[in-house]
Image (cartoon, rainbow, N blue to C red; front, top):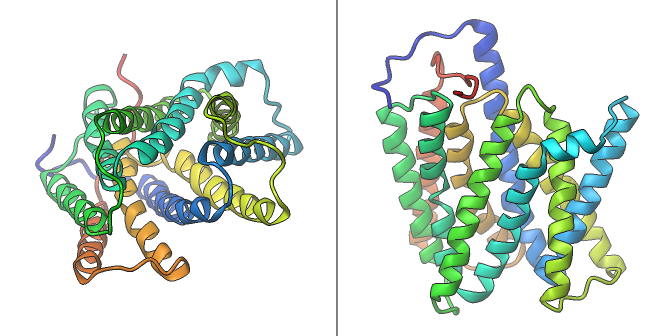
Length: 308
């Protein structure tokens, strides 16, 4: 960890860094809205995951092919662990939501920056300033208040909490694999291939849990396509692109903004109520993350190669 006396980065590096921050903010905002869209679609969660990622992966592969990049077995093998991580995250988290409280599942998932920060410090030589650690901790506390302040009907379950823990490590693994892919795959190749892997993993799981994977209704198709472009192009593509430009811990910390966006979008579009305490907590999360972002100017803590 660091006291904040990092070396000064050059102007081109800082511009690269700033672009990555903007991309990460776009990604987490898209994921937050995507959560609300997923809830609105009249399909099983695993079935939505199957169609969402298969459609996005296929679209991304076609786009890459039109630009002269062929996705073959090499890129599928190189992205395998990232795809498995993302596929398991989707399956674990959706299962956790069914078995335990939404609060437990979401707050356990909000611990991702802790896991990623440890890995980033150990294997990627990323130093994190004490100021950013404090602000990140405040953000996590704010997320907990936002989530636990919501009306809860589901009761906590040990099995469900274990699924949420599995989602935590799978989601962290996806971020780490995305960072490791730098220099091996482009962000577009990694995103396209991991989407195909995720769709392939969720299909048998959907069938095993008895979810209907037949062709969606016309209305569901519309929302699925919106989800593909919202959470896909503006979500996974933007984050994987950003993780080539900003520290791994920083991209992970931005995910704490997802519950805030989801709660706000659910209030706006689904008429889900927000308490005064939740609104204040959401403001705390936004201000703390804004402090992390503004504190990045002039910091020479840019992504470094994987330590061998």
